Length: 304
Image (cartoon, rainbow, N blue to C red; front, side, top):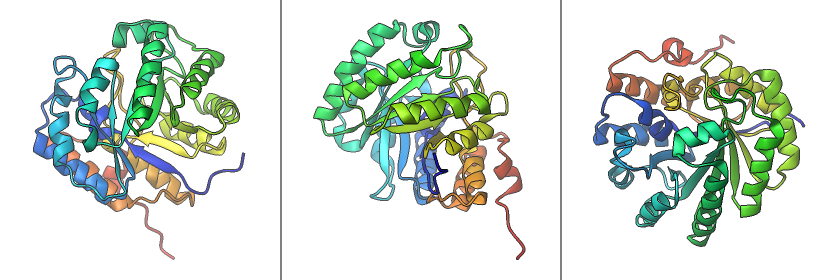
């Protein structure tokens, strides 16, 4: 497929990033950072997760955050739900968000450690949740974690992942994201994978979600782009990582992804300077140095 000339980037830092932070992030700081991301031009920001507070304490204030943020009218707020109970709690606040994310792991072991269920049990619950989400008039995104490898099982067959994607498509989801949960993908496989996924999932938005655990995140994003993928997830400041297993590092940095695309002539609709500003503000809030290259070096400027 021809390389897309424009892409969509979903910012997941306020959920995927904050959930892994060891320190408590004050609600007012979260709101301020999300508002800054909204000003950068994001059309979709993943803000909260309706999980038990004792499981992920740093997301316990999700409803307060949703109530407090002020983003442009064309920016859609997203929430993640792990099961039907989480969805039930989320729908009590239906007016505060636009999109709902459901998920499963392609690996039985990772799925069991992450949500204490088998893949089949999770998919049965996802089918019911997808029905309720669509009935509520909400956009439904599905994410398949460990799509490119599992830290417990190793290789995850492509056909297993795409078979789960087929199930999600049959449920009527609007989007299917493929997560490199612990950064096990490489550019050659990313090319093979997204070529197959784009051909198989016609009519569904296909999204790439890479982690930079082994330093290959941007190369994988480039390979997915060349395969025709035009939808990506990333996290400002390279925040995040999978809590299962511990120690998995974060998503590719949004500011680095945007910088790469812009230098290639691929439009993102985002203000790179404002994305970097948001990442630097996150650095100040967290009280530590974040290592994305764009925070350190700033955007490229050309002397014409």
